[in-house]
Amino acid sequence: MSQKPVRVRIAPSPTGEPHVGTAYIALFNRAFARSHGGKFVLRIEDTDQARSTRESELSIYASLRWLGLTWDEGPDVGGPFGPYRQSERTATYQEYGKKLLESGRAYRCFCTAERLAELRKKQMAEKSSRLGYDGFCRGVAAAESKKRAEAGEVHVVRLLVPDPGETSFRDAIRQDVVTTKNGEIDDQILLKSDGFPTYHLANVVDDHLMEITHVIRAEEWIPSTPKHVLLYQAFGWEPPVFAHMPLLRNADKSKISKRKNPVSLRWYRAAGYLPPALLNFLALMGGGPKEGDVEIFGVDALETGFEIEKIKTTQPVFDLAKLEWMNGQYVQHLSPEAFADALADRARAAAEYLRPLLVHLGQRVKRTSEFDRWTETFFLTSLDYDAALLVPKKGPDKARTLDLLNKVKKLLKDLEGPTAASMEAAAREVAEKDGQPPEVLFMTLRVAVTGQTTSMPLFESMEMMGRDVAVA
Ligand code: GLU
Image 1 (cartoon, rainbow, N blue to C red):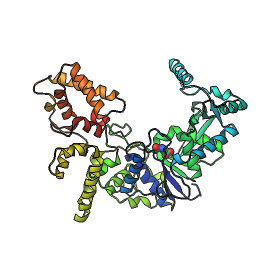
Image 2 (cartoon, rainbow, N blue to C red):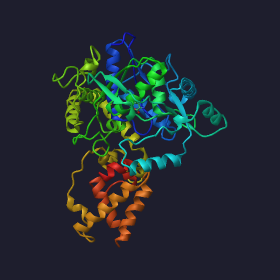
Image 3 (cartoon, rainbow, N blue to C red):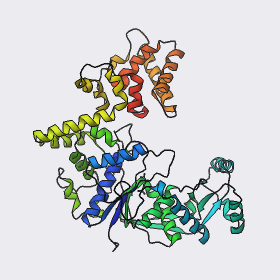
Image 4 (tube, helix red, strand yellow):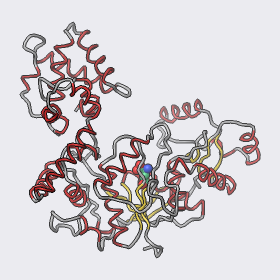
């Protein structure tokens, strides 16, 4: 193990809802830092300017704090290695990009979008084993490349992957060496044409400058790691220890997704889960303090003597029924005072989570306590209703109803950035094409997505739960 003081980080991208996977990774990073007297850093990776929002960033802070997964350094608390928000570090990435250009480990690529699209088409047509950039601009001489850039020609900066050769790293969880042939590694874009870095460059530069000793992250990043290793080599830096945690899985073993499991931490808070229960559950997913040991334990048990090698390599299934049971264990032991606090927190979180619907709720209730009756459906993870309710009394029969529902489903799946209005238009289109009054189909749809015949406004509800959940 590295002799330097332990420094670990989570590096979430603030795009959308704070993800339960972020808490899972944070929990283990933090436990590792605590066990080794190290530091736990929160870095905001907002290089995707189009998708990153401040709201999402604040939501990440709030959700992690709710769980007690606090950090020692980060954009909001500061620290000696700041700034901790990548959008404030652009000049640094450009400087390091320039270094790689100068040392010949990266090159400018002037290929147009059209050429790249052509290339891709050709590779697809030839069923090429490797899809990716063909290195065309590697051949541009350094002096010419500089001249063209200075003349303002649009370009990106790509990593020059040495070929032949292979790139290896050791994974501390699998305790195995992962080797990739360099021929299979794309000449990754490091700096985009607008001068902003890609994830790969920013991530490596920051992990190095922030003196991160162990990169403990989700397994989905394994394919990126060889590129990162090549970057460390290109800079002449020592890479950190890499540890890739097994992904949380749905019951069918697919990567956890909101179609099959709630993934938003805001949802868990609003649905009445307790932080120690959720943490206990997540800890167990990674193996817990000692494998096969007790199932109920405080998270502090994880924070002493925790070693990366203790993380299980088997695919953890995110079993909501188990979490439900575990939460019950914790609820049972709440004192009346703590219960009252939990209730108050849940009420606030639920109102916050369902904020877009409150204006509609206000129009139909006389007392705020009616909130639960109208919004319960948003906190259920499976609907239990009489399927006969789907078929209208006067209208299409069972087979046609099913056909109509499938048609709506297909249209919904194809919508770009679905909103209440576009989802309504899709359903209306299906009804009208079939010569049905839309209201009849809307009732079927209401039952299908809320399990009830009366609900909050249907399409606003669908927007609230999200298209994927509505479709599921
Ligand atoms: N920004 C990446 C994410 O969204 C970070 C991955 C990493 O930890 O390197 O998860």
